[in-house]
Image (cartoon, rainbow, N blue to C red; front, side):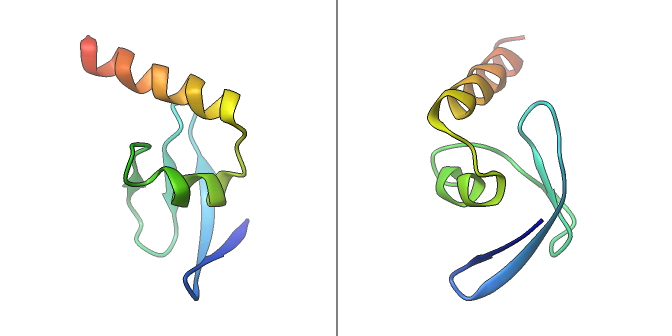
Amino acid sequence: MEKELNGQKYKVEHILRDGTVLDSIKGHMIEVNEKTETFYRMLANLDDEELERLERLGKEKVNK
């Protein structure tokens, strides 16, 4: 899937179950947090319910 943000194109290679997006431009993982939420939504086309689920998963990982 290819998306454009601020004039730059990003190609998503894979979206992991925990909500991590692997992008082919940078080749690293982009965490879902307040700073990356808008970008992540554009890449993954997620609705509010799915994003909330991913945020809960992230918090559970931190609390382990």
